[in-house]
Image (spheres, helix red, strand yellow):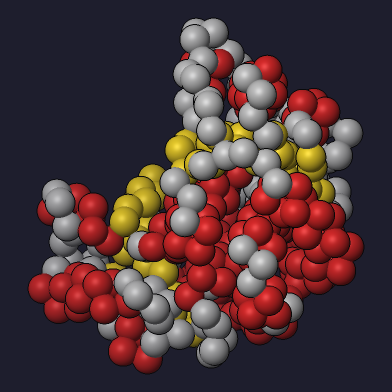
Length: 345
């Protein structure tokens, strides 16, 4: 099984999660509505940490939940956990194996908080530490770089948000995601061609904002772990507060800019980078004006609500990272120095 095969499994995985896990998530949402909490305390590492970035925006916007991101070493190494009164403690991990993330849920349970795990292994230590478990049903993921398990985590996060709010319109919208994912996979040949152009790239910035702040971080991570490029992710707002100074003529900038609340802000930055800095732009968007700023425009399916775009916009980025890895002559399935399950303490 190669990473490219796993990228192409994502519509099937998303559909399986919708078909087989929605009832469980609805049940969990009912349990949570009967529980006592007023904010979400989220723990994750690596790719799962980027799924949590998505949850930060989604749960704030649609569930009116303040979200705090855990500092796991306070629970594991320092053994000085904060008080979690009023928290829903949520751990997100593909493998469910990392001891520091498990320790956060164990402490949450000890302090009497409702605890929930989102994982691809329902028999993992993380699942055993939680009151309730959402199985992302990605199937075995053998490539080191997480792809299908990442979008499955995003789907689980989104399903829980909609179910918790009892929002039937958003639950219906989620049914369209597998089809949009299939459309995004049609960028494969374009991404292959783009990889040839970028073969000698050694550094870049990756830009996003709002819901796709998570996508910028995940795309950056894929470039780092697979192609060994120094890819730095930024919010478009943060980027203007200093880092834009690194941009000169021909500097590669990757951007995720679907239409929605942050589109105008992203568009202003893209015009600034293209017109004043002469940056080399790759833009993933469903907005024609944003695509026109790019040397490499990557069109997203039309009609997606902004809150669902991270589940789809990451797919061209995954394909680009895969093809660029191959163009550079590296092993896309087993990057150097990495293993599938990383256990941090």
